[in-house]
Length: 105
Image 1 (tube, rainbow, N blue to C red):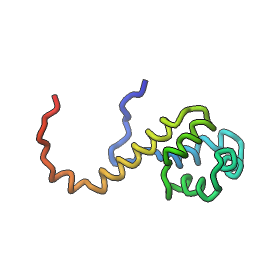
Image 2: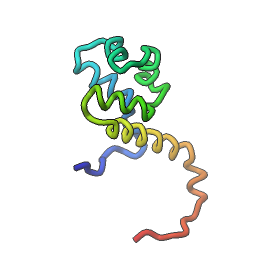
Image 3: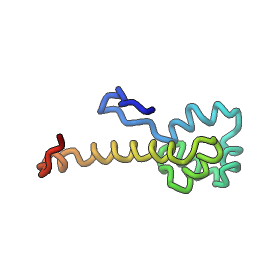
């Protein structure tokens, strides 16, 4: 069961690329080229994800979930958290100007 994170709100959530680059791929003992081949994607695409210049698409999440046997949801949730964090920081001033019309209890 997931618990609420204690990460400081000014720190971005880890990206799927960062997780792959720092933890997952090294744990396999395989090269990035071998991982790209196993995923059926180009090395260029894998490197773009690893360097955070490209996010994980639903298709790539399916491939990652199959390869690492953890399902696509893990990768999609991680990408979504990163995307929402970035957008909320980019839109901070615009969002502050919006007044809620419904109160949540």
